[in-house]
Image (cartoon, rainbow, N blue to C red; front, side, top):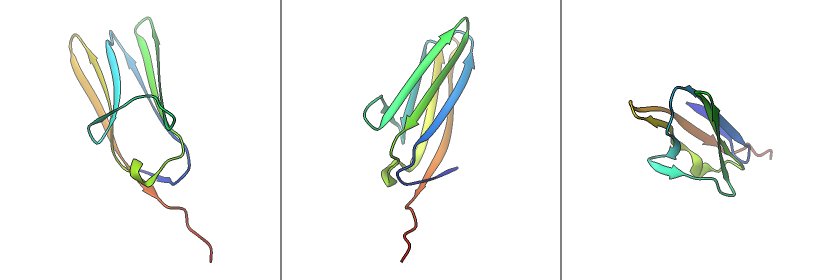
Length: 92
């Protein structure tokens, strides 16, 4: 489980080797694509690949199960992690 404060950026990165056809990210089973809040990066050469997901301006609604999936001709591999988001404490 990862614990992150609201409005802070959070990045996760995976490194893979072999013949990778596709790498994708999802939250609670829904695909994540690069947008204003999310950035998905991928690169690879000679059988070494990496993919990074950055969530900018983390929101309470970003809490949930995040999964990265790699697919090639031999099968599918996934890795998941729960993200908990806490509101920043307010001083009174």
